[in-house]
Image (cartoon, rainbow, N blue to C red; front, top):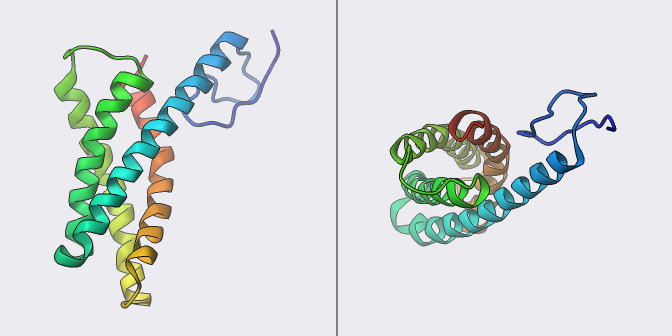
Length: 154
């Protein structure tokens, strides 16, 4: 068995020099790929909602609504497709924990928007979306680790 170094968050072998079987490495990679596909779907959903609501409701309200919808969708899709959980067992707990994770995402994205408003109050919707997307990328790594080790722990 070879010794590998894993740099991806949430892998079972997060410590440098840990021995990992080839099967486990393939499983972790497949799980991360599924997580990224779910994330892309949820990001697209978030973007459409945010852009539709930004002008009439403002940044904070549009961001909050889009995040809640995307977070519920994200937890449901990750539960089923990334972590392979079927049925209703722990469904409410999983969604509750997903909403707790949402709080960190909301703080990051709302903080980023507040900084943008302070620096460039007339920024376009596209610029606002880019700023939020960068904040959401940072939250994505945290989301995977928390989903993997807290919400859907093995």
